[in-house]
Length: 221
Image (cartoon, rainbow, N blue to C red):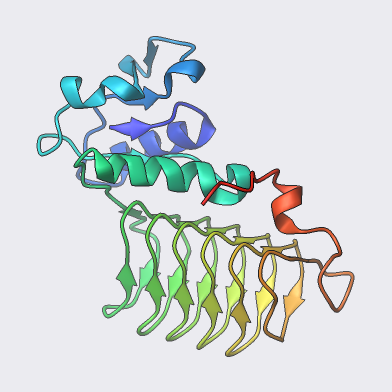
């Protein structure tokens, strides 16, 4: 079952259906956002009813949500799925290069042409869009969203809930603090502060917090 019915949910349906052994049986949406009854001739059901319709143990779940509220919407739904007792499955493209000792967590989505090298670790609930390089022994924290053609060099650490923009570069051994936004084309060669925005047009962070940019409420985890 796929949680979500937007564009990413449709992409997930396509990839799970045509590039994995799994069969999608339904979509689930939180009741306030439930606008249709079916998608791809499959039922779209209220999220609060999934246990009764598709019991844990008989069905697994993938949360197909992107980076709303700096990944917190996806993080919240992932935690709720786990609380309900479901296994949260990951998808790794058959066209990705993933070395044998890489560790990938739950509810991850690894698109085509990603390269994930020796002893790299990808946390839970991470999206790696197409064409990224994750260098040897680098660690991507939980709930991150990595856009296309990002280079994460060796021995890097990307903190939880970060958004890393298209064509950006993280230098060797750099630590990116949690809740950071790395802008498109940015080059990061020094450790960053938490909850800051870094663009390709300045050496230091923006004065605007990433939490403000993504309208994250103070009580959101």
